[in-house]
Image 1: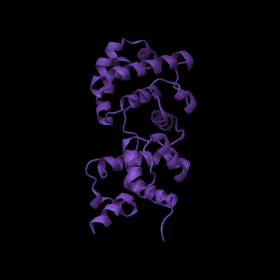
Image 2: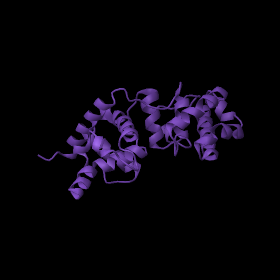
Image 3: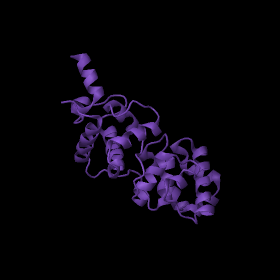
Image 4: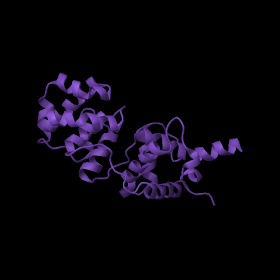
Length: 218
């Protein structure tokens, strides 16, 4: 019997949770604003690289006021290796300034308010809400989630916002962030971008891309 897309998504989630029971956010942080900054830095950059940069950054600028009013050039120097450092520094300072001026120095806890901060789109907002506040508002869609969701046949869309909408329809809300984190782990460990290891993938029998390629070969 052919699985519905919703049933397939839930079976994929079940397998992922078994494979990665301890999966959690890979970014190092101590406060909500530090998580916000680390997530902004993670754009077009690996979490591993971000985690090498943030200890020195947060030692010098530990909170929103210090980041908002720090010297831009010093912040740029500290985050240089994450790429796009000028734009990231501008967004970090802009976001922290708004947090200080409009949110009493505290990172806002709603999607609507977070999206008003410079450099913050739904991906960043979802990460902050889920991991800083335990609020599950949506599905975090990064490059891994985008790639695997398409390969698995859970969406045909290429835009993160639409992919998120598709996944939200297929998965129970309490599991939205669990799905994202687990599939990110799987994307790093098995289903990488250039050479997915389909022969060792425990999702292969549920994967549209694997079945399509396998049928071509056979």
